Image 1 (tube, rainbow, N blue to C red):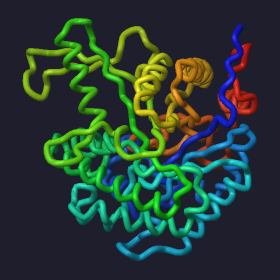
Image 2: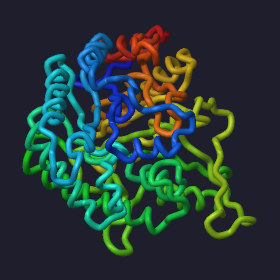
Image 3: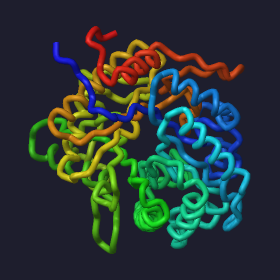
Length: 412
């Protein structure tokens, strides 16, 4: 049997977002959304995993799993609770977190916007407002000046396509708009401008720290090999993977200025052309048949990861899998998936994809946005009453892989 060893220096990490783990974030749009009944389970994001106070313990757990990297976000609403007013105490807190990661031998990958925005920002129109890029740029510059010596990587934005889709088209995320195509267009155009400004500022202020975006790659597959299904799937993929940059022009998200590409991948859908529902409803989407599904109802197939990674080869940049995992209470399923998907990452590297790291979503079971605590992605279980952490069998398996920098020959 071939030894599936990963390249020297490969980053083995986990990922989390501030609002999902910290607790106590009452100054952003997701807290407001929660108060309006937007969480389907009725759960509260406070205290979440109380990571704000327990970060040292949590980082020690990461090291016990032999990870050497961690992706985290900085909560904008903590750092800038009012426009132009920066909280030195919160910036000092994040310096402590990043310093602790460094001292524990864990490279921080820092995300600057992971779905949450300050209330003052959203009340003036949020990402759909004309001043959004400049406001975000002010935040980015202050963060870079205070903690810029500590990150190993910057991620400017997390999943801009999903942010616009969920908030302005499907209405499942704040601000809860449905079918607002113009609003979604404005949001994406402003996020593109914000990324450009952030990229320029970060390259100037922290020239040694690579800068990228975490792009969500939802694969669309034709339901049948017929031309009309292939065309429908191709159109859906084009819309998902692009954002507006200038008037009338769309560009692939992964073509934006960057030093590396961040790939978030979870699932795929089949697309069928449906002539009975013309206009906006001419596509029917469903799970690909004969694939297992997660608690989210998403189909999973580890082979899709290799396909996503191979598609990025022509861009010619290093690639990091910035999110990947499954929501399941069946940890045996998670273990099998981990072995299968990492095997496909290895296969992609063998096929000359420049993949340099894998960040499992998520480090611990956390507040999964509108689904509350019902969706468990973590390698570490968290008791909601006591906040006790327990590394799952999947966490021990992942730790073994991280330690050895290779997949186990004996599987589970």
